[in-house]
Image (tube, rainbow, N blue to C red; front, side, top):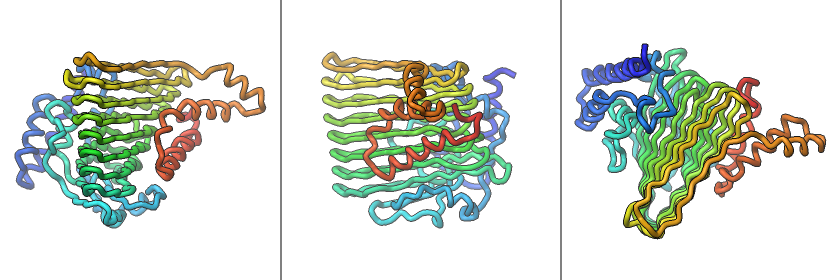
Length: 423
């Protein structure tokens, strides 16, 4: 069976689930439109440029069902919640769990499924269309003008419902009004085999600042596809640091637009992959206004037969004079069988800009390793020290103490996993 036929079969399964939903309840037009887009185009395949390095064949034989276990019964998962003293919103299998959530009163929160916002593009991102016609729940977060809302945890806990693989497609929205501030810590955890396909739309208004930390540490059998849209107004700031350690197959997409003069975005990430994991980080930063700046630093560490992908694109519109854009991807291969594909891109239509990009792939420096060994440091510890030093630049922007501790703890735990999942 060809790859295209396998992905078509998987797409048909999702559409059959939608037809069952349509028979039980009335379907709003936006859901029907998303389903029609998906019906026409199906799941993406490596024949498409944006998916050239990532295949979804691994999930083609799995019949992902609708979550049925009542929210509030997965008490064992509560122990996995991050030990951070901050308001939190928790979703279990894509559904809001009020028992595990404590939103606080610093932000306005509403839950429930909703139509697409102005940023999502189901017509061009098929996994967003899939989210659209199967979305069951989500959260809408609003931070009032000038408010410093502190820290908010947004946690996703996934399960396979005792051997019954499920898929869930939450859709979230976040809006910071002018001058507002928020640190959003988004964490993805779980157990078993499932598919998690969230969409998050972010609006950062004039002079507002969002710090967005993401930890994807889902189980080895999970599939993770997430799409983030962020729209940043004049003098607004979006700072993001992501750590990708989990899931058998994952893809994170970021679509950022700097639409006002003086807007800025920092988009850093660390990918730690082992075994046969495949992780794809795809970013598009559109500079639509003058005097905007963007920075991207992505570090990848791969061992075993892991496969990492970074596709990063900076788009500079004709009106976006005095753009300052920087993009760097560096990969460290700890195994001869590991693979890294890197595709940095610049698309520039303005003439007064400063843009650069680069990529490197290499192994641990044997001289550095020898130096540490000669000082009495065991080989495993020496390799760990060198890897942590390599990752330091990607994590350097994190100023949030508890958020940084969460990331550091996850990275340290990577070395403690079974032998087949570590270097």
